[in-house]
Length: 449
Image (cartoon, rainbow, N blue to C red):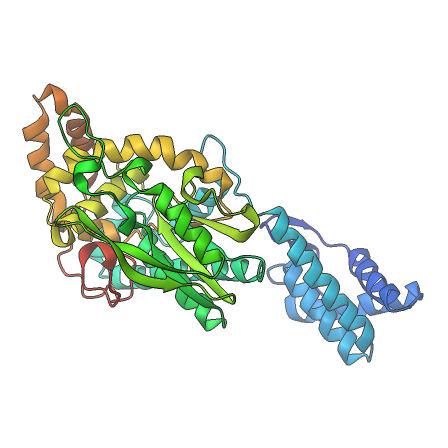
């Protein structure tokens, strides 16, 4: 009995959509490449497309469908091996130009009501594959001693997004001069900026980093609320005029001296750190308000790449309700403020209304203007954060329940307490690598902040 040869019936597009395979599309692409170097033989293009199809059947027949990229790789290989070198080169150039065109069309993130639905769908899908989309799922991972495996997988996923973002930046060189890493509080901007810099340097790109936190006004100049508390979260707490002047001077190749801000004393010192941006260097900036118009308004848009980072975690509680991204960041900030900024976790909870008010007004509405989004949520964080913070949420619920002026803090603390209550706590953080973004918040990082 003659064995049936499997066929290629489907193709996976770049956006993940599965479509019907069509050999004629391959033949047309080859014919266009040949025409670019003087070829006029459509029949030869169709014969080469048939050869490409035979190779695809050998590699993919009977298995998962090939991707568009897989097919293009086989086309290039076939053209080279059959001696059509000039056509192959034209095809490679055509492929590269199409990739650049796609990149230019996708420079603005798709967001509806400030929510990047396409991105969070991929986050949820990743979590489901790794069994960490629910509190119960994370508990099973902890119980079965598989948390180190989840840590490794989460770190690799995050670093892959960094590498992809770096490539997007390189594709826009040399016109691009500035990369802005923006996002709400405790989303991981500082570590992401460092890692992005590492990836760009590995690709041969020279760069310098500017820490906008040093441009805070002295604490007594910050706006205050009805409690008399200082607000770090508004853009007006930063010396925007000085930032823009320094950015212009850097773009012009002039030397500047940036300030230095001490969070423990709440004071800054001017003209401390000398800095100059050479003509072949890229400037990296991490800032809460990097997408805020007043932050970099003096610099033309074509010179800037705007990367947005957020904890787009997709973890559901036992009632099926997803954890809020802002609650995840609150926990991170509580952990960081305690060891790095000499603030008690209860103070962080009480002041979090400033964070939300400012980001809802000055940060989140600009997500649609970003060129790229990175999800910084690492599902393995939650058991480690519970071990460090759960008692503070218990105390906050009791402390603020009857305080009419702190009802925002009470509601938030109760919501996070209820989320964490059934979660298994993990004390030891030794499996978390020293170069992890999470180390920015719990300490022990190999990076200096």
